[in-house]
Amino acid sequence: MNADIINRTIDAMCSEIKAQGSSVPDWRLLTEDELLYEAAICIFGSQMQFELAVATADRLRNRGLLHSKHLSEMTDYETSILDALSEPLSLTDKYGGARRVRSRFRNRLASLLATTVAEIYGTGNSLRRLLFAADGAKDARKALMLSVWGFGPKQASLFLRRVGYCADLAVLDVHVLDYLHLTRGLRVTPSRLGRLSCYEEIEDTFREVASRFGHSLGCVDLATWLTMRVAKREAYL
Image (cartoon, rainbow, N blue to C red; front, side, top):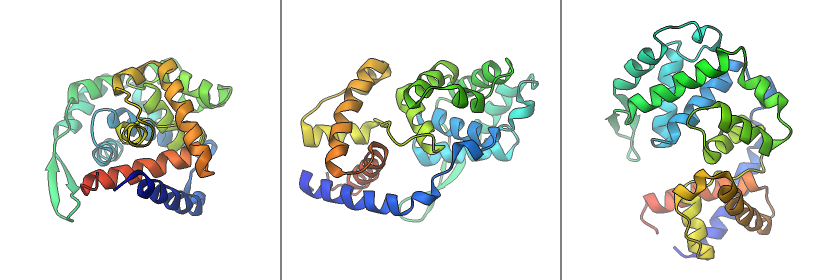
C-alpha cells in the first residue's frame, strides 16, 4: 500500500468521521466522574493497547474506583486499583475470539492514577475546574500535563479530543509518526515527543498536512491513526 492509497483512505475516513460528528461529547456536559474515566483511559493508554486501556478503565468504574466524590478519602485507594489491575481481562481479538489479558506495569499505573486523584481532589480541585480555567486548548494541555500524572503532550491531547474540548491538537502516536515517515520522510523517536516544544514542532508539521486534506487537524489525525493501524495490522505496510 503506497502513500497515495493511504492518503485517499484517510480522506474517505475523514468524511465518515465528520458524518458522525454529532457523537462527539460536549465536555461542559460531562460529569466529573466521566472526565476522570476518560483521564484513566488516557493514563492507561500510554502503557497498553487502547482496547485494553478502555477495558481496564471500565473495570475500575464498575468497582466504584472512579467515583470522584469519595476517592480522596480512601486510604487504600492505590491498593484497590492494583487489585483490580492484577486480574486478567477478557478481550475480543480481530477474529472474534476471546483472549485473556493481564495489564502490564500494574504498580506504575496504580501509582499514577492514585497520585493524580490525591493531587486533584485532595486539594479541592477538579478536572472540570481545570478545563474551565484554561485559556484555550494549548493552555488546557499544559495544565493537564502539570496535574495528571502520566500525561505527556500526547495523552493530554487525546484526553481533550475524547471529551470534545477541541479538534485542533494532534495525538502523535506511533501510527501518526509512521505516516509522517512514509509521506514526509520524517524520523521522530517517541522519546523526543515527551518535550512539549518538540511535540508542538511536529504537530505544526502535521497541521500543514491536515490543511491539505481540507479537514480539521483532529479529524485528519484520527483518520490517520485508524488507517495506519489497520494497514499495519493487516500487513499492508
